[in-house]
Image (cartoon, rainbow, N blue to C red):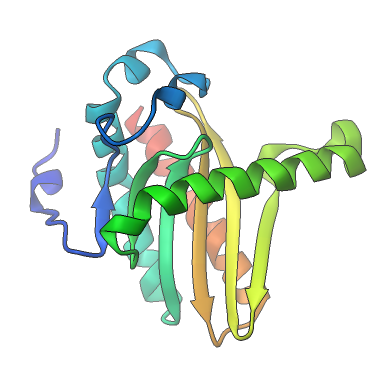
Length: 176
């Protein structure tokens, strides 16, 4: 492992990895390599440390960003920015549910044309947008990136989130 991982200090609004002591065992339902699933606590931290600089770059590109979270599709946090530590697990689980419901609706409407890598979910409340995209990353399985930002056009948020997801996919692809 690189020394760059040692330089990342978590603060109150940066959360890395997922603790099995606090999360249920549903991570085993994700289609990931058995070796990664067996050492989930270690791998979730490595994945989080690999992805965190990409979230920080996203924040630099989108200055009105409120928060960002990368999680598994079954609701386990990998890394986050701008989210209180006590809310990270709950938000990862809510994103999982929101994406599952949205995907189910998309499958009903589009049938076989629906695909996780082409699905974008967004919510708007006042001047705040939440955009979530899905990425399937072998051997990790299905991941979700959700970003909230205010006082910016929805399209700007969507483009930045998709670009960040592509960047994360490339970086994780080089790591695994």
